[in-house]
Length: 123
Image (tube, rainbow, N blue to C red; front, top):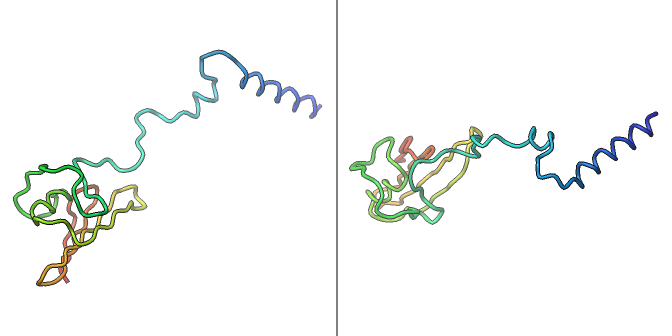
């Protein structure tokens, strides 16, 4: 009986694979991701690339370096590209960016989460 069941199953699979119908099979419909499901974090506005430059120029309205400004606002307010930029994703599915500026008075490290300044470290 197991051989007959296996043969019947394979015939069903082959029939589904060779069907010329344009309607999706029940298994295809069940495994398709929901259209509203997003992959990765939702980012508002342009961001910095690994080279420390903004992906869009002339964007941003921040007037001071303070929590909540965007990555590109920081570069615009500093007036030059960052010394180093590390772009990654946290285990929570968030975009995390570390922006380093080497200034004459010392280093400044800016931490962004989903394109918003979270904290500043000036060692």
